[in-house]
Amino acid sequence: MTRKLLFALPVLLFAALGTYFTLALRPNYDPQALPSVLIDKPAPGFDLAALDDGARVATPGLSGQVTVVNFFASWCVPCRVEHPILMRLAEKEKLNLVGIAYKDRPEDARRLIVQLGDPYRRIGVDREGRTGFDFGVYGVPETYVIDKTGHIRKRFVGPLSPEVALKELIPLVRALEKS
Amino acid sequence: MKRLAILLLTSLLATTALAVEPAEKLADPALEARARVISQGLRCLVCRNESIDESHADLAHDVRVLLRERLVAGDTNPQAVAYIVARYGDFVLLEPPVKRSTYVLWLAPPVLLALGGLGALIAMRRQAGQAGPAPLSAEEGAQLAKLMQTDTPERPA
Image (tube, rainbow over all chains, first blue to last red; front, side, top):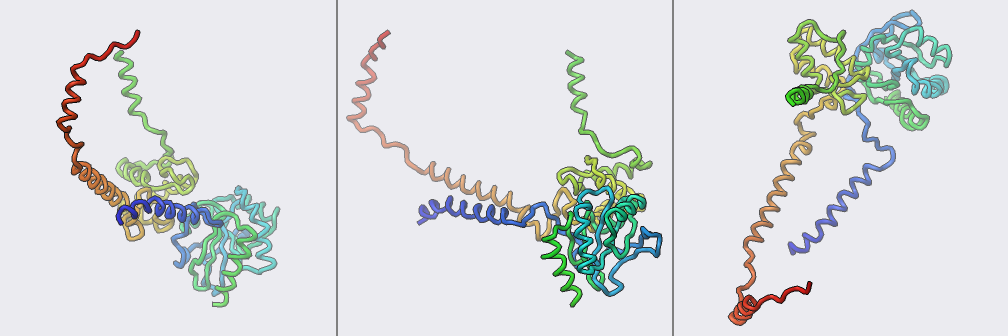
């Protein structure tokens, strides 16, 4: 009996490894993905100078509406890739987008907005990257969905693709708006 | 020879180039030393397998500066580390903390080693327990003795 079990051992090991590899290779699985530690926690407070020199841009959520905070920079190439999608989200979906110009000179960020259009309701200037640090940003662009009570619900690292925007971001925002 | 030896020995003292820039360094050597120790254990999230002490990435620079600010503000080492972990998660620690979610990670190597050792032990015992080949019978002994007596014919050249 033990003998038979021993013969089955390699087969069992192969099955276990095979299962693991198959799971690791499934589409949309990103081993590099790093979930934010702030999920379901209150968004870090911030109080930033506005890019348009208007009223300061401060912590969202208090307004009782769902906010999508997007960290971007003029020096960031993927942000330019993402920009048309943000424009669509703002124009077609009327998302409440707040931009944070991460470690960028205000004049450069302003030029980007002039060149590519402005999808944001407000833009804050995070010159030193402090607010980014508080959010746990480790590269731009990063996008955070903040619910009505000011809690972070989701983080998207890297440029939003049309698929992700359509299948994940918009449904999430709509669901949060209803709750 | 002696010179070569000295050269070789001193080359052992060389370490990898460090990324800490002069402007980042704290005036207080004790605080700076603590900052160095902490930053050697913090992962640079851009390069993933380098500590922020070794990395030249902008983010590593920022975290080094923020870490030093916390130390100057009077944080203890664990407080300063907790400040960074609160933002970037346990993944920034190059040595994963021992907690429920990492038990498998920490316990798997010793458990596997113990299992392997147990297997080896059982296999060795089994081998030791097995009797050697049966002794020669009287007839076989006589045959062997006869073979040993006869000269081996020389190989043809």
